[in-house]
Image (tube, rainbow, N blue to C red; front, top):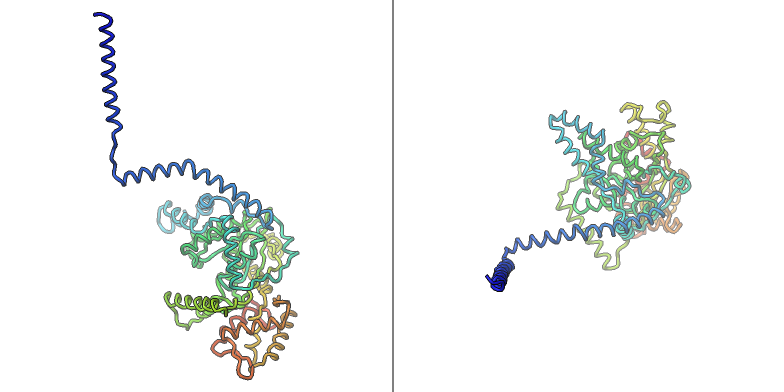
Length: 510
């Protein structure tokens, strides 16, 4: 066959192949129809892949850099730095707590006692650990939480920091674990102390189960607080809580505790509950590098938001109210206050004052009070250890009671309750002035607004008359309203232990 014919056939074959391939490609690029739900799922998956691989890592890097710079600036101005323990990822802390040898041993004993698989006991321990461990966020604490606490505290009260043993506080070693121990008068205590202590440290609170509601629970966790289930008899839960408190104390985390274990019901200081104190010191090594230092804090208010609620809770004969009625009372209270604000007739709830007392070194106190064991509680059995912790709790409550501020409302309430007949303003001021001198002679810490005794008495009297706890007749004579004497007693009890004839607050219920 001639070469030209062969070449022509080859060209024709190539053209045919090209035409066939073109038809196949055309067939392949024809539109494909898919259901809308499948298209949305594919798009969401693609978007998540882009976020997960590109945007989220870069955003984390950017935010981590900003947070680290913020922590660096904060640590330079804080007296007590934020500890690495507080910055550790929450899941890491949960795992450390869960696999603590003592927790593992407690879970094994719990499983044997309950005749359950060991894995089930560990699952329960993990659930307890997840409920207890906080999720501290330095940015939230100092940029958002501090602003909210300051705004709320100043909106409701004239906030004052009264007495502070500055020299003793400055002498606390920088590597010590500082534990602020305070009386518990109101749920505002958390807000008030966090606000006033924010230039010193970031506090980790022990908060009751009442706060485990959305979204309050998440906010409290971000502030570094950990939840405590009061009166729990579950041995596994108590061991998990104990080991967390030990871990935080050993790591030097600054903490805030209420030794009373709950709000005062009658205004008096309550005897201490020993659980958290025992957890903090049970494994304390007095020869170690880190001391535990307790700072007594005294708090008082001219008006406690929960005063009537606490009085009712402490009265066994009082009629119990349901949740809906409690909500209505609360809504009516705040509605009335908002109405007074709108009309320009609203006054803040008086003064809220915090005093900081002389620190108590656990190492020094144990060395003095447990010489036989060399100040080491680990050498004592449970009963002997609790006896020591009980004495320490009593000493701390006495130290707290000594720095509870004397505020105008508590002062005037105590004078009016002691009066046998109505008093005019001049006689009331004379009696209150004598009471001030007696309290000062006994070592009490008075807060005098504007450093003026006369003004302090006037402020207290005005608060009580505005609340209709004190009545004034046509002759200008003041007297306690009979139906409101329990509430006046509640405020007078805040300083009853400071009077020369007052009872010892730590021994009051023993």
